[in-house]
Length: 568
Image 1 (cartoon, rainbow, N blue to C red):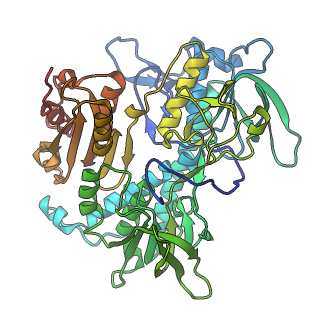
Image 2: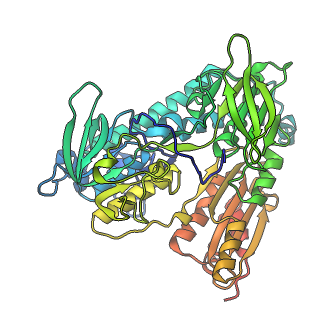
Image 3: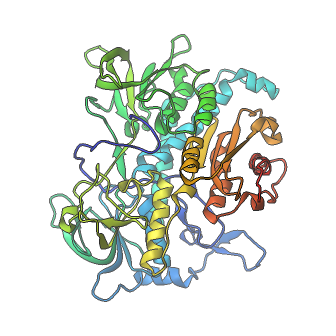
């Protein structure tokens, strides 16, 4: 398979590790315990809450920080357990490691984080943060280019254009800003940031250092591996970083090709198709522009609920300058050179017989991610990776070759392969910190949402309808499905964005929410009501009485829950 949300990867080629971890966009809250994902605690910026118990605002504080925990962290980052340099050492300073580090400081643990590349990992530097900057531009361009949409508002807009370098600078500047925010937040709370490539030398022992320099060995009561992932490049594909690229290269937006093939139609491929089709005007108004998907499975968007995927394809792919080849592998891709185009050789995914040859200006390899785990020193503690992933149990504790838990060693995020999403990495890290602090905690991965930031957006949490039906048949219960349309939502119609659907999969006998899928305006924001309900065990018969402001998009979910029929 060349693309899906739940990746099934062959063993990747050996990769030089630089201790990156994945991340996702910022999550902000006015609560004191608000630093999660790419967000920052208010203390980082020197904010304090107003004295009024009814106030939810923050004002700049010119006095010293008043939080006792923060002050303790700044003065010494806690006191380590007897016989150790640190209570907790984290290998990898992506947002997963970052979230774990700050939660550890909050728990009073003396904490260090090791990073051999740059703070922020894949998401902040080469993933979801810069990609959202590009998608923000593509969304605005798409709206300005839609003459019918503009006329519906009574607006007249001249031909829209853009400055490619300006767009690229916006993405780069955002990544730099968030990277600095993450670094400063850890420094402000006293987390020791150790520069170098980290690896395990034995039980509760880690070494780190730069190439050509002597390594430093430190001890820790507990260790978290948070090294993330890198783009997966299948065999036979030659990446030159110019005409055959991965998402790492594409985010730099060094050029917008006239015709680009995207290998894989999952999240990464869909988002870049949105960017390229919106910005394709750079090639000239009199020149054709084309995106071609190459997908190994028989249908596009294989990781999505089939009904949502069908609707999304009708809106995101069919009307745009996109064609596709499904049921085929890109067996060989040769970069453009000597005046020749990029050559893509396609074979049938089942028979492996030659199928077709494409000649394009560029090819983007969007076939998923591979765990970034080589060189970790796992052999020193009798641990072997499985297709590159570090094996863990439901509490993220590492499992050795004998099937036994390795004491005091955990792995979070893309490196363990449980759910290759940045916010999942952060949630796993926080869960581990709870455990090492003496409180048992098991993360419910079915409550973790996912989103694709196309225009419109796609979001989901829990099971797809086929998955739910399979589970119901196996366990002996019935499921029901209900749907609501954005066309019935006042706010969506006011925005002239009535194209959309919300879908609820549930148990009518108990009111348990099994899955929610949304396609439409701001779907990525709307999904959290459903994900929080699943996480908290809230039943439909309770949540349907929640009150939603009118007119808002949140009423799409309100109507969805109210339309469900629960027997009990």
